Amino acid sequence: MHIVVAGLNYRTAPVSIREKFAFAEKDLPLALKELKNIKSVMECVIVATCNRTELYVVVDSQHLCGHLLRGFIEKWFDVPKEQFNKHLYVLENEKAIEHLFRVASGLDSMVIGETQILGQVRDAFLLAQQEKTTGVLFNTLFKQAVTMAKRAHTETGIGENPVSVSYAAVELGKRIFGSYHRKKVLIIGAGKMSELTVKHLYANGADKVIVVNRTLSRARELADKFSGVASTMDRLMAHLEEADIVISSTGASGYVLTAGQVSSILQRRRSRPLFMIDIAVPRDLDPRLGEMPNVFLYDIDNLQSIVNSHLEERRKAAVQIEEMIGMEIAAFEQWTKTLGVSPVIQALQTKAASIHEETMDSLLKKLPELDERELKVIRKLTKSIVNQILRDPIVRIKEMAAERHGDDALEMFTKIFALEEQLAEQKRMEQAAQKQEEEAAQERMKEELLSKVRASATPADVLAKA
Image 1 (cartoon, rainbow, N blue to C red):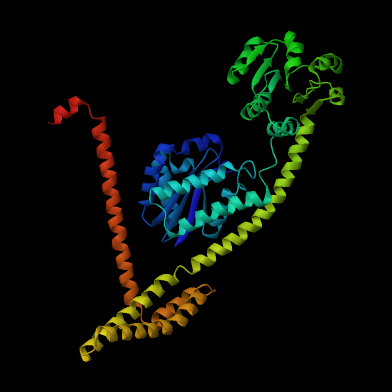
Image 2 (image 1 turned 30 degrees about the vertical axis):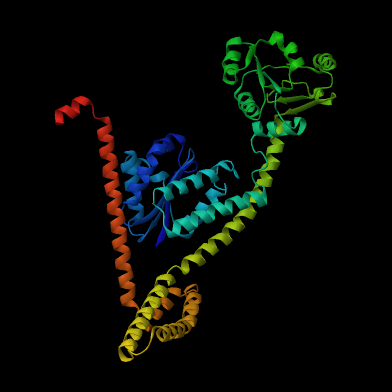
């Protein structure tokens, strides 16, 4: 068995390319089934976000695997391979496993350490489980990746420090107000950064939004996004008296608010804190405002320095997470090495049980005078002998299977105990069960398609067919 991931992400493809390969949420169940039906694909999970589209598969052979996955992408999205080949990455085995751990823990994200991707990976796995496209390997690997990512965020706190200017501003305000509940936001100018900052504030409970701009129509355009109030610059001082938070981002060549203007307002505010964010270059707010009582002023450099320090903290945490990933990969690989031993042990136990039953049948024929109680005692004792004889070989083969030449040890073990016939029978039964499951899945798909056709048919169509 081999684990492979093929995909595109924000590093390998621009958004103009990525958007061509975005799965609609409603189509994912069908996509999983079609991917699972590809020859050699035993298990599959699709992780689809705005920044990445990734196909995770377990295959029984690596031969042509990349070609088959490219073919699936080409067919599903109706885009020729030539248009996405250079943007596609294909990772195998340990590199694929490491990639999943990095994705789940946020180390492969555009914003390092972000937590949203963890939920997206978990949801992708749960959907694949629901659609029955996962098995022993992915059920273990994805659970391990999600669990490790949760632990990484808890133990390192990588996601606690904001790493965008707008988000850093919002987090700073929390230190001043504790909560933004029922706080009033005054926006001076209507720039993109101001809009992004107020979006974060609004999401955190800020109540009233007032947009002051030289052009009233532009002020209205932004205010409407937050059910706010639009106003012009001549009303600025009146609005300043009621505001709790001021965000300024205009194209003015001089200060929009000076220390002198604000000092006359402060007396009427009765010591209420005033949080001021100056995102403009050149600056809109007089730096002397920061020296006034109950005024907390931050400019773009203040915020950027906070972001940079937080990025450094996240990088330190990322190093810790990389070490955790290394240990998780080792643990998973150790577990996979013991997977091959299970069928062999099962075959040995089946063979031993069969020999035991044959011996008991022979004993019963030779000693028909034995009563039920005597037979029960003999059966129990002889079964105990068999189990004791098998105990040490089973323990040893488990240990040997996890070592460097585990496959050779399993092969020798199989030959010593002559288990080839039992293993072949197990494989035949598994293949029969898998075939039965695939046939049932195909029947379900046919039924679903027929149901859709029936549902979309008009009364006229029905009469015509009748």
